[in-house]
Image (cartoon, rainbow, N blue to C red):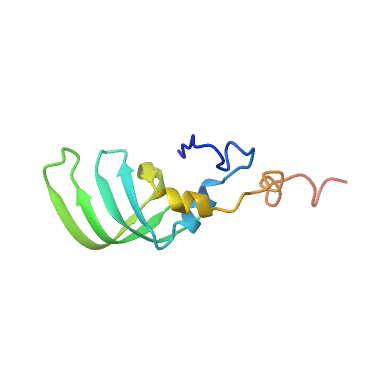
Length: 116
């Protein structure tokens, strides 16, 4: 979930931002990831894929209750385990606006074979 309320951002201008565009723009930047089980991971985003699986480097993991910490060289997190991501404001400002009219085109769209 991406939340933004500041004036002049992509949301208030009527533009749109797709989550994968945001993640790809955030590559190389610090972020916080909270999992559905309550654990948090602070690290630098190294890569992501189309299923929001992400790889973080130089990670500090915090236990669900916040009393244990681990330093890890890298972590791969499966996208369906992510509750939310916290990304720096300046990264959000760098995301290119998307043309959502093109978002539904491609695989599985209308047209192609069998539309005779």
